[in-house]
Each structure stands twice: as structure tokens, then as C-alpha cells.
Length: 93
Image (cartoon, rainbow, N blue to C red; front, side):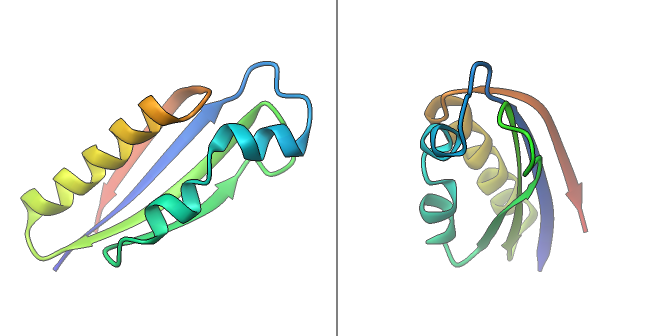
């Protein structure tokens, strides 16, 4: 079993309310939480409207599959979130 912890910090320039922050993040929890190999949570930047931090725990039977899932998550967030990914950290356990 291979496990990775993927953390993304996202900048949300011009965000003025918690409601707008939630809309701009586009339901990441619902989208990625459906996959049984992925656990997701908003892990930081709770008090800042112009930033959000999300952590994904990805589990797979093979290293290439785990890497593929992590890359897929990064790509979907880059394309699907109204913000800029400022930092990505990936830790393989």
C-alpha cells in the first residue's frame, strides 16, 4: 500500500466573504471525497478570505497509481478553481 499526503495552498485574490470563498473553491470536498482512495479536508487558512489550504490523503496499491491520483487532483484544481495554486507539497508515507 502506498500513501501520499498532498497539500495545496490556494490564493483567492479579491475574495470578500466566506460565501464567495466557498463558491470559488467549487465543492472540492464533494468532488474528490467520492473516490474511496482519497480523503480530503480544508486543513488551513480558515480565518483568511483570500486564501485556502486543502489536504488530500491518497492511497493506492501501486506507486504509479498513487502518483497518477495526486497529479489528477492537482490538475483538476488548477483548472477548476477560481484562484491560483501558490504551493503544493507532496509527502509519500
